[in-house]
Length: 277
Image (cartoon, rainbow, N blue to C red; front, side, top):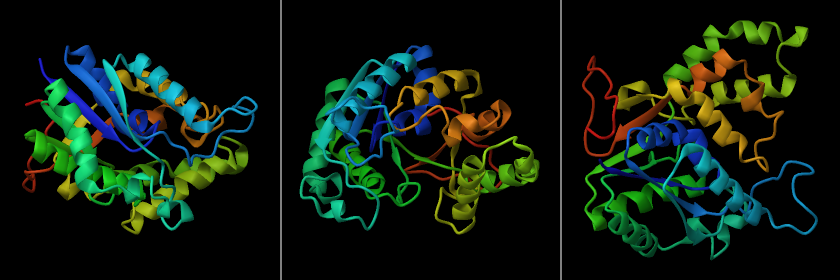
């Protein structure tokens, strides 16, 4: 058996991006470790979720452990940096935020954990962090360097399949047509449209041609959804994710996409289906 370490930027990223992979890896007998760079201090809490005077970061740490328990993870660690906020926000300049962290120092922190757990496989994000968030970009930089320091050879960049997103939007066009009949609330439809438009502009995910691995997580998509729901401060029951019909959610989140750091996939070659072989 092997050890998988998934490195993420904020609480809830782990469930959305690699929740299926981690659940399946644990089910198959591997050790699964989650490392989160920040505690998500800059998130916007759902109304009424926090108790009076309760710091958001405390709740998000608790939620991360709850999600980890749902997925059966062996260990959760936080690197100790602060959330940088979205690109262009004044919080990007906070000297304690992850975006401002010295890459070598942060990489040494992560490498120490990689060595301690004897990691065989590491997941990070693609070079633009999936959608350009500063902390996600920094996860790529720090994760790549930490793997070099710790000697981890199997490194995979979590991404989103831009081409499949556009295809799914086209296939589910009827959802938009039926919006006026109440099948989906306007906010949900607007979120789906924004996602498709960002993909169309090349600002979201990666083209299928550069993706090397497609991990089928359809069998555990309900576990993945439950782990996402554990992050109640960020993903409320009325969120875009949970307003999707089950079949649309399964289509959107039933496959997790990765780009191998040191290899590529030839045109016409099938996707790899496991990060462990």
